[in-house]
Length: 272
Image 1 (cartoon, rainbow, N blue to C red):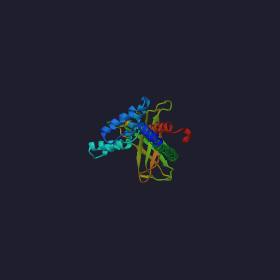
Image 2 (image 1 turned 120 degrees about the horizontal axis):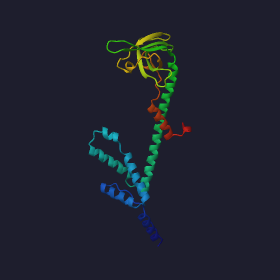
Image 3 (image 1 turned 180 degrees about the horizontal axis):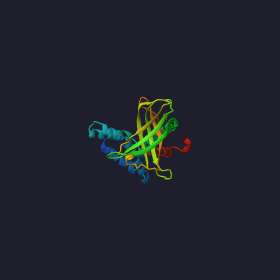
Image 4 (image 1 turned 45 degrees about the vertical axis):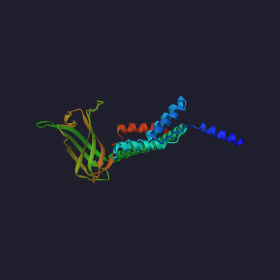
């Protein structure tokens, strides 16, 4: 009699077991998913559907689909087989747990990538700050803007006197020019330009240049004013090999916004 009750208990437990997804065929997959869903209350049904969708999306690689030479039908079949393998034989609770594990793994990877990007942007800022210190050794002692009369259109001229107080020979210098009237808050022009130095500028050397920007550029449209002053900021210096020695460009406005967003989204202030 005791053995009979044991058999009844086993059969009862088997009959009460959570229904599982059957991925043996497409028809079985659809019907078993519906059976699993119907065994749940309304709240769990929603969680189950969201978990199934999340698992399915994790197996979808749009980049691989776009780059693959395979037949589209074959790609779809392979994708469906991957999803089937992920969910076959699983109950609703196992599907929900699987989705939670995948979300945790995804969040961990996103956090890792965010930290890596933050470090890259912070390093770029740091390098720009150090570059500004070095660039201050490339002295602009004189700067002037004026127009020369010409037959068709007046020629803008930028006169500069510079001295190389760095330890390196400079092949090209990059500048940001600001033409402004001291009493006015808004400059007449803020424009970047650069100059390739013929023969370079060795450490300790000084040169004066008369640069002629394109008459049809912003400089050409600029009106010469008796009350305005041209101030020059050195933004980058290239060495003898043409590569940047110092670059104070720093972060763009988008990169600054991106950096702040990553910090606030993934990390507390005391974590960085």
